[in-house]
Structures are given as structure tokens and as C-alpha cells.
Amino acid sequence: MHLILTGATGMIGSSALDAMIGMKEITKISILSRGPVKMAEDAKDPRINVITHKDFAQYDSEVLTQLKGASGDYVKITRDWPAEAAKAFQALTPENEPFNFVYVSGVGATTEPGLFSAFWARIKGEAELALADIRKENPLLRASSVRLGFGSEAKHDAIKPYLPSRPYYEKVLRASEPAIRAVMPNIKTN
Image: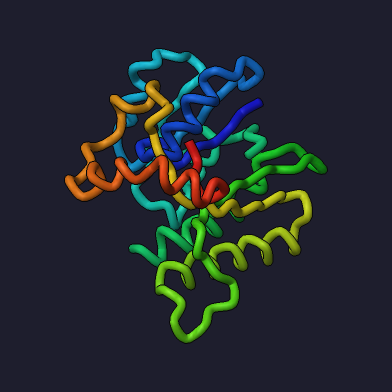
């Protein structure tokens, strides 16, 4: 199984990469990144191919060739790039085989914005709708959106060395994690 990963330098992407490395049924991991991915370099896993890709709104034939055989500005980054990636990637699988595309959205995203909906929530909702429309056009593109809420690397030692240093206010907020988990157990991911 050949998987494509974006966002590999962030907390969620690092966690996904760590999980992929541990799965022996995954034969190839293609990482699209604007820069180096230290965790991938340190893993020294021959299955990993980091593809430096500066413009996520466009996918040239060289990039798509490296992704062949895979089975998976704020507005541009959040809404447009995922839709463009899904459109480009759907042609990577053999005929009549599905392609799974998972978009990491966020708790609070909305597909029905109201007067007081936050800008980011509207844009993420628009991305979810765009992916749903693409899926309707091509049922073999299995586009899904997941709305993660509060993530923590606290119990994921494998990714800690690869995450950027947190600002002071976030370090203070970490002390509230047990209370958040107790009050809202479904909003938190480890």
C-alpha cells in the first residue's frame, strides 16, 4: 500500500507518519512538504520518499509520477489546496480502484455558517463541501473530512523531538489537559 502524507512536520502529521512507519503493510510513504521532514530523515526508512513541493495549488507531472500507485495563503492552503490535491490524486490509482483522501479539518468547522461563525470555521467548512462535491463527481475518490478538536503530543514520545517549540501560553495551557479530557472526552486526541 502506497500512502501520501502532507503536513508531516506538524503534530497530527507527525503522529500519522509515526503510525505509518509502524505499519508493515505500507510499502511506500510519499511525503509532500515545502521543506525537510526531520522525522522522515531520522527514520532512515527506505519506504519514505520526501518530495519537496512548494506550490500545493499545482501538481506537475514530475510530482504526480512520484505519487503514481498511491491508494490515499490561509484560504488557499485550507480550502483550495486540499481540493486541488484530491482532484490530482484521484487519477493515481488503477482503473476502478478507489482512492482514499482524508482531510483533517477541525472542531468548530461549519458547512452552514451563521452570523457569528469564525472565518477559519467557514473556510474549513467550504473545504469539506468542496471535497464532498468532488466525491459526488467521482465515487471512486473516497474523500473524507475529520474534525479534530484538541490534540496533544503528551502521550506520543516518538514525535516530541520533531515538533516546534511551543509558546509559553501553550505550555501553561497544557496543565489544563486533564480537566479538558474529563469534561470533554470526545474533543481531545492523543
